[in-house]
Length: 88
Image (tube, rainbow, N blue to C red):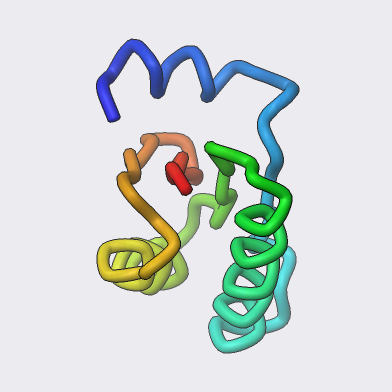
């Protein structure tokens, strides 16, 4: 995913969003992400914004680790403000 597309999607209100930073733990957050990615994929959405929040970076590390090898994700771009955009 190129930088211009990432910036455009980052500021769009029309992109589906998965908000993980309110989850009670990492396992719950990753399960929620998996379930919602599958749902958005079935709906034929092309891009999804995954919000993991800003903190110590533990959830961010686990999300990035997960999206790197996820079979539904074609590409991804990590933002600096607590989120990433994934292409399905």
